Length: 95
Image (cartoon, rainbow, N blue to C red; front, side, top):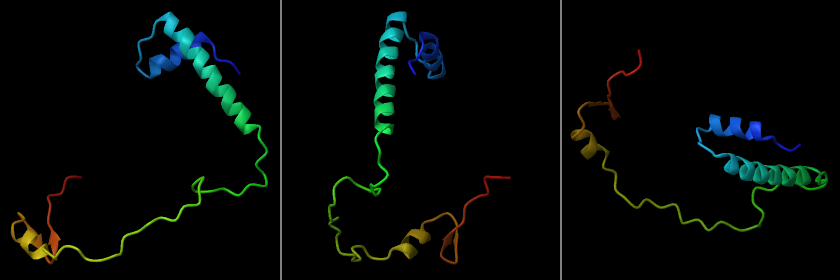
């Protein structure tokens, strides 16, 4: 379904974009091309294809799970404005 210039004008206004009539014509042509591509993609039969999380089957290289920094919680809580029982106390901001 091709777009009209009025629909593109409305989209531009909602997007807070100032567009000339020439820019609206160009944008309408480009959006029509995008919508036609989407329609062609939706027409493809994908019923026998399993969904994939990534187009390539790659193994993720993970680093080893090792502690690299020392525990400094007591040092950080010593300089905090308010801390109690290992927790930072903050003022209530929502009534």
